[in-house]
Length: 306
Ligand SMILES: Nc1ncnc2c1ncn2[C@@H]1O[C@H](COP(=O)(O)OP(=O)(O)OP(=O)(O)O)[C@@H](O)[C@H]1O
Ligand SMILES: [Mg+2]
Image (tube, rainbow, N blue to C red; front, side, top):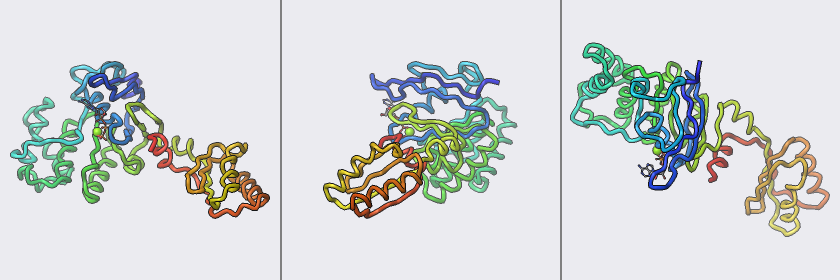
């Protein structure tokens, strides 16, 4: 069985500027993938290419081993970042319209539209005009539209970014449910959203993939012990901090500028006793010694360079 999606060397150039600069990944059926990155990373451009709405400048997208073609649109559901609706339509009319567009007959469309309105908690609002819907209701209608034809792959562009905490919670709950039945890719700039519902993470920045993998493998890969150390702002103490990175038990160090240093270490116990001994031998008082471990948040911050 080929992967659900195989993306290789995907590029999109706008006016000579690359928005997506060569990304490759595979996605297996049934997974929920978070496309995570800051503003301008290239998430929307990537999703629009995956949705078949934008032609790549280079690279290719295979869906179940085949190049995406005409009938691909029936296989996917897409919720844009800022969906626009016909405000004069009712929710029900809009879903019927979306179902008919996807090629369903009148009867099937009516049945599916009703089921989706019910599922998205919009049954009572079905006959009201969309213009009077709240932001959360519009987003649920957008989800209903993306799901109405039972697609094999759901592409959601920042489905919760514009919502208040309650609206956000509602959509996240729905996503968790939908993720059990359908393969989903959704973009977000919030790591926490990705961790809440997804199996896999693709971290993007400046049009390229900075890091990718399953949530658990990324956690394991980056679960490195770290020590934060602060000394008095005295010359010999600061010099000592600066030379710490030459020690074999220290993997990486970063001076923070306020007399503190952030150390990624190989072995917490070895590092702890060595550092405490060195400081004592030199008569350097430690203002702060904190042992912890790197979180995925730190990895994300590092990957996106902020
Ligand atoms: N149609 C377009 N014409 C010209 N440049 C574009 C176009 N679409 C996107 N870009 C540029 O491509 C880059 C990536 O944009 P994109 O919208 O894909 O990022 P994003 O990760 O979705 O950001 P956000 O989090 O703000 O939604 C940006 O620099 C953007 O200005
Ligand atoms: Mg975007």
